[in-house]
Image (cartoon, rainbow, N blue to C red; front, side, top):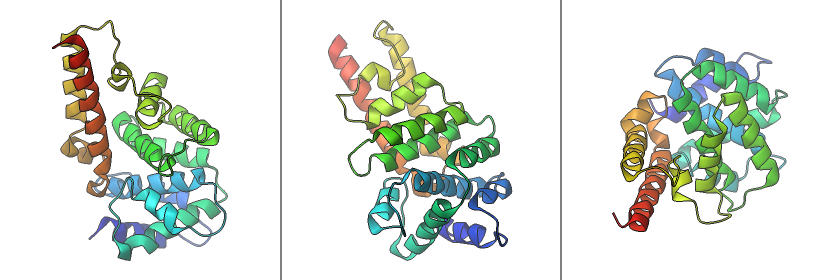
Length: 227
């Protein structure tokens, strides 16, 4: 059964009057958590969106920055998007329920936040309101501020990303320390590790971009140090 079929079933199971946030109470355990991860990214992405009315094809395209969505599954993704946008619950309630669902699995919450950065930057712009939104979500998820800054520097094209910041390291660190940090991040970004954390296989574009950024930063540092 496809991820998008499971999402449609989960949303359809909501009782009359229940908001989308109730889905997270029912999807706490694997393999359902991958369904919850996808719904969480779409739902929080909807709360971050500015446009009024029904979901546009452009907004669906933004979710393709994170997920593989077949044309036949677009309606299911759009339904989740619109349910979230129409729900009276605020994004902070969504984020709190998602945090409770994943508990102390900080890796999955960081993956989810990274998915929101993909969506925020889909139009090539990073708006101040989006930054405030993502900062607040990161706070609720208990993502450390240095990790949030590290993530933002990879996505927001204000300037060339600092390779040390991308690796969450310092220019004062030795090459051996930096090499160890690079290897740790590569291991954590392996698709098998991410699936084990609850990230659906359909969202492996997260791993692709992260690996590109990590390896580019490591190559820059090695070139800079003549290694």
